[in-house]
Every structure is written in structure tokens, then in C-alpha cells.
Length: 463
Image (tube, rainbow, N blue to C red; front, side, top):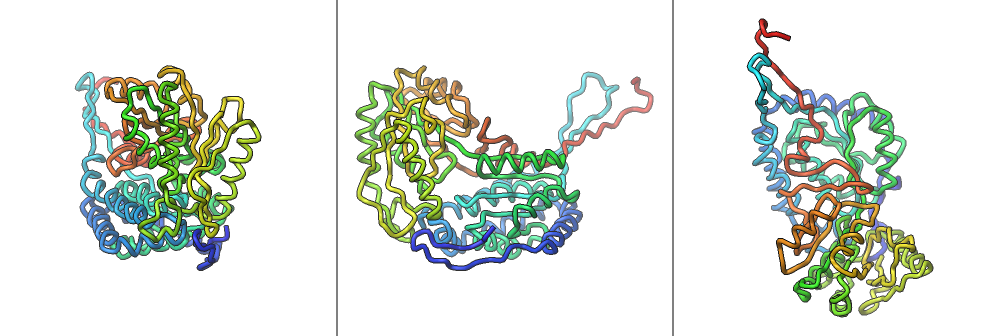
């Protein structure tokens, strides 16, 4: 897998890490299972105490942890600090709510002869989490906090370009008092990942990543009869109706597309603009994008980060060239980005029609599709004409109308007058090629539990 820290801004190789050995993987599996046998018996209060301590450590060392994220994948330092805070908030959500969310439920029965029926939510066991590089801490927290709260234990296979972030999070949980084996990160190879999934000690796998990786892991999990969840790509629609407050809407559009360097599955990737305001939106949006400042992500004045690697930047540039070859118009916007670093010049794609394959692609970088719509019905049709179904937005001065439009957009999440939002107390997930399953809140904590019915029936009750 070539686990290595490479600074995306300087291109410097910082450190390499050896792949896990097969013996290390086997030991980790056994340790995770032994830890589960004890962890499942711990109280919610004990689990919450450890998660709260981890949240406190994150906050006390916010800048230290943030610099690891910026160093390894080029995230703006201010955004990295916000990610550290969000990770702490996710842990605290489950500190406060996991016991209530997982409390046994008394079921209403039609007749007392059916007995006293109770639904219990019990942990499954060892889980494998496969996580991407774009949010190195948040992605871990999003699976770790609910599943540890539920009584499961975790093995982590993180992205190969954020090995220090993976190690730092494992050390964090150890410092917080998590028992040995309950959370372990492995520099695993692809063949070892398949071995882990097929192990009888592992009861489920959660992946956040590409469609290709999701298809492979889902197939492996299905073959092994294991539960899986997939959080994959997205091409969020950003629908602008005629009555939208245009200046405020444009500011959200620029932010929604370019935060984290545009490397977000819920970025506002497809701007769908009702024709009556299309020209004005495009003019204002172009000005907003041109005002972004590309540079050192450690510098608080920088507002456009490099991509996570030179390979990622090269891939986005190639996809732009292909989109143009198929008939799209690509307009580079703003001052030239630095030659040093994995930067991509902010680019606006127009004249992009459904017969162009790029119309259906996800651009993981600062590339904006601007698509005209005849009216709001046409805007909904364009929004739904996508293989993805993760998030989306509707901008209008009429909130009730915006909510009605939101119900017509076929995705897992839709926001009115805001880009798709990521918060500790909101669920996350999509449909179609964006995956299946949900993370966060009660939906996330119940993805990998056994919903066990326990029914106490009078021995003389009829069958």
C-alpha cells in the first residue's frame, strides 16, 4: 500500500511506514476479539468516560493534531482545527446519548398472551473500518464513537497517505484509557483487508471511499456473510431558484464547492441555476472563486488548499481535459495557483450536457459544473439525473417552497439555503452509487448491533 507521509504543499517525503505483517494482523484480530469479550460487558458510563476523556485531549491539543492533518493531506490549518473540534463533538454526542439510544424497547403487542416483548440492542463484535484521507480524524470519529459506545471493538485500515494521523488517533484513544485491543490501526495491504473481512472474528465492515473500493469491499463482505455499510462519492446539486438571495447564495456556493480544496463527497459540485438568474449567478460566482487565495495551508490567510497529492491533482486535470474533449467549456478562474504544491486552478465547466460523460462524473477538486435549468421542475430533473444520491441544497427566499423542492430531490440529505452540512448531531449517508447505511445519531449507533427480541410468555399461553 506504500504508507507514506508526503507534504502536498512542498512535495517532501516526510516518513514511510512498513506494511503490517500477516502475524501482526492475526495478533490484532485476536486482541480485538479478546477486548470485545470484556468491552461488551462495560457500562455505558465507563464507555462514556473514556470517550469524554478523548474529546478533552483533542481540544487541549487542537493545534498539534490539526497540524498533522495539514501536513499529511494539505488541509487548511483552520479547517483542520475545525475537524479536530468536530471529532470531539461526535464523541460527546455519544457520551450524552448512547445509553438512551440503545435502551431496551418494550414492544406493544396485540394481546397479553403474546408475552412481555422487549427489543434489546446488543453489540456484534469486532468491526473493520476502512477510511479515506480527506477527513483523517472526522472519518475515524464518525465510526469509532458510536461503535465503541455500542460495545463493539474496531480495527482501522486508514488511507495510505495519512499514516501519522491514523497512529495519532490510536495513541489518543490509548491515552484516554481505552483497553488494549479495543481500537487498533493497521497498515494493512489489500490482501490482508480481505483476510480480515473473511475472519470469523470480524462481524462487520464500514467503508468510506470510492465507488470502486466500495464495490470490492461489499462483494467481499457479502461473500463472508458480513454486514457492511458504504459511504461513497457524491455530486451534490446546488439548486438556485429565481427568488434566491443571490449574493448570499453565491457566498455559500463558493464555500460549498471549495472547502477542503473541493475534496469533499458532499461538496456542492453541480450548480443548477434557473435561467432567469443564471447569468448574474455565473458572474458573481466567478468573482467569488477568483477571490480565493491559494497558498501554504499552514498560513491563516490561505483560503484554497492544495489537493491531497500530486496524483490527485493530475487526475482532476485529466478529467477536465476529457470533459472539454467531449464538448464542455472549461474556464480557469482567478490568479494562477502556485507552481509548488498539488494545486489545481479553480475551473468552471459550462456547456455541459447529458450526452457528455463528464456530466455524470464526480470532480474531487476545485471544479464547478454550472448547469442552466428552464424552471424549478427542470432543476429537480437535473438534480436527480445523477448516479449519486448523497446530499444537496435548494436556495430560495420561500422556505416552504424550498422544503417542497427538497422532498423531490432523491438523495440521503437535502438542505434549504445551506450547502450540505456535516454536524455531530445530524445523520450522514446516501443512496444509489453514494452507498448504503447511515452514520451518526441513533441510526449510526444501531448499524452494527443485534436487535434481539426477548419475549417472556406465560407457559399456559396459546400458540
